[in-house]
Image 1 (cartoon, rainbow, N blue to C red):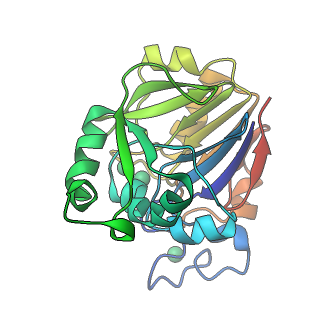
Image 2 (image 1 turned 90 degrees about the vertical axis):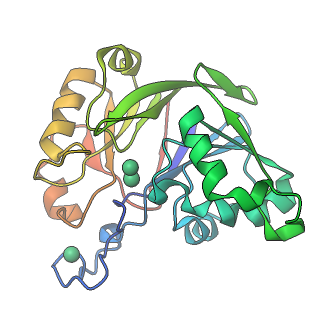
Image 3 (image 1 turned 30 degrees about the vertical axis):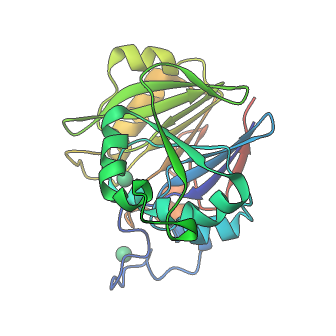
Length: 252
Ligand SMILES: [Zn+2]
Ligand SMILES: [Zn+2]
Ligand SMILES: [Zn+2]
């Protein structure tokens, strides 16, 4: 199973528009963070995790030609705004199934209502099928376990796929979900910045989660411009790294 980080930034991305800080003006390409999303390749399946506003650029960088399914963590704009840009893939792949919680998919139906009306035709709308999930499901042979986490006061979805745990936009992981995130080869986990935030783990909170869950490797995502990849990355404990856009990891 191969995971490619398509984007690793928070909702504004990095650089932040108009910001002149050292990270936003850095020459290190690892400090350029598109909105958080990932591509998983497993057993001949290509699975997109979230489709944010940078999806088009991310798909071109990854030479993406086909998706078998999209799994959504939640309906915030930075995770769903790219759904319209699935249109060329719908031409190649037929209609694309989108999996998520019933609430997430209700939001998608409302925001992308034109995709579900008879009057919009052909390439003017993405051909998508909404598949609400609350229990484990499969895309082809790939088994996917949805897990409830909280994002502020909002219950959203994390996923376990084999020995990968994918957790973004969490501020809390309930014990019953944490129990399903043990024994991982790779944990992807959000870490917004150094300072606490009401709806996202800070770096120290994320490191506490990693200490509890004990994955073999952890990759941090959904970062602001608070972190210089090289300097802040050198301070992380063994087995923990900041992910960066385009990074690919193999999962055992
Ligand atoms: Zn987000
Ligand atoms: Zn900045
Ligand atoms: Zn969010």
